[in-house]
Image 1 (cartoon, rainbow, N blue to C red):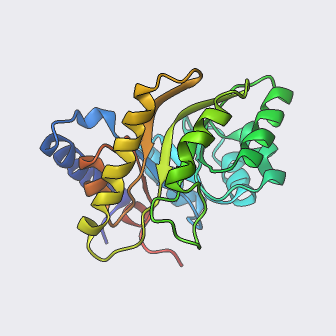
Image 2 (spheres, rainbow, N blue to C red; image 1 turned 135 degrees about the horizontal axis):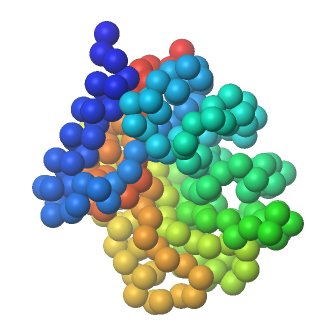
Length: 230
């Protein structure tokens, strides 16, 4: 069986190759290790192999892992669907929240961040495929949402996150990744206050190479690091 260390090494090589193919610096792309249902000891093994960002999908499960791995030098990102009533925990424990797609959620994050005397970095989640089963703001509504959230004092928009429709062929996901990168650039050109747009979270185990070629700075990878979930 291939070790976690070897899997990470292979993923880094693929990221580097994809970045170089598109004229990018491989150092501009980071791996978010998706820890959903992964035993804590396996997560710790990945950190020992050099993984520095861990992603949590569920608040309760993530808090248990954050506590168990508190001695490790890692950054935690919340990457799942966040309910407003759990926003205070996300603000308290996560360095970046990837999944903000409504004014309501942003307002609650802002309120909780103000209570904690914190400016919370977030990404705007865009529902690139306009799928009813997925969260995120629709592409046509994304710019107004960015402008609205940018006015909140205890939130800092760092960029965008998307999850395209699932395809067996990663090339079919490429247009969605390209559209997100183009949209990110359009927002940058508007020089809206309180946003930086330096982060593009997109690409997972099956399509991260295409995502990197199209501008991803964070790729969210679980299975390729930890193996199939039970």
